[in-house]
Image 1 (spheres, rainbow, N blue to C red):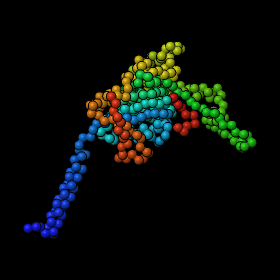
Image 2 (image 1 turned 45 degrees about the vertical axis):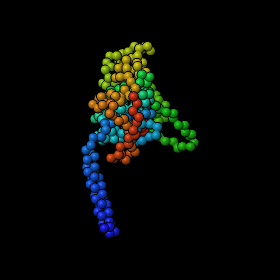
Image 3 (image 1 turned 180 degrees about the vertical axis):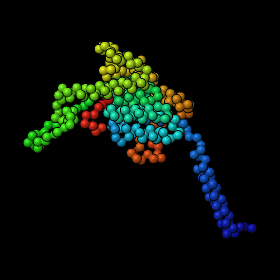
Image 4 (image 1 turned 120 degrees about the vertical axis):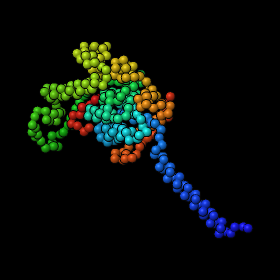
Length: 306
């Protein structure tokens, strides 16, 4: 006998209900099991490019805020096992450079700095915070030095402004306000530059195997690389490696392999991702990663490391 339309309808409803319940059960099970499944091990690339400055974000520079947020994302993502800091920067503000150096040095996971273009002055300082520095043979490394940029005083027509008398508590309090440096003021600034330079070199000596004796009391000789170094010169990657400014020579692939080795993971199984700095205050529970093809200051007289 043929089933009645009502019986067929009931059967179809039962089947549909079973399907819906099954899908719901599978979805719940998958949601519970998925977090426990191991994620693929990753190596994250964070770029350090352009001038280094303080602040939150910039189109052309790398800011302290951007680097901090990128490192925080790499720290939070448990699948990221190590970071490659890709460096191509002429340096920047001393305060920004030192803050970034401290961020990299404190980072809990292995960090390998890769000098692709230039690790000059402030960006070399940041690189010193990494566990290992790898330089491309034709990169530029060094330019260890400090300068203060005074700028040009803005001319003011006397008839357009009322006379202002400033009373300061010391002879250096209104330094450069009139656009002129006397002998005492010039010596004061020279000492500030020398102090910053000495602090920079102390970090270089601490983070490398360069002995202090090599860079102290060096005779003036342009052919002596140590004289060139203390006078703010720079070297290609090969010479920088010879002098001990970097730890290894290689390309990006060599650097990624080294990062895998430090992290204790297999290079062949690692996924390489690029971390872009998220907008300020918008990175909670968000990871800005871009998969990569894995190839075989507002200061009156700011001090620059550049």
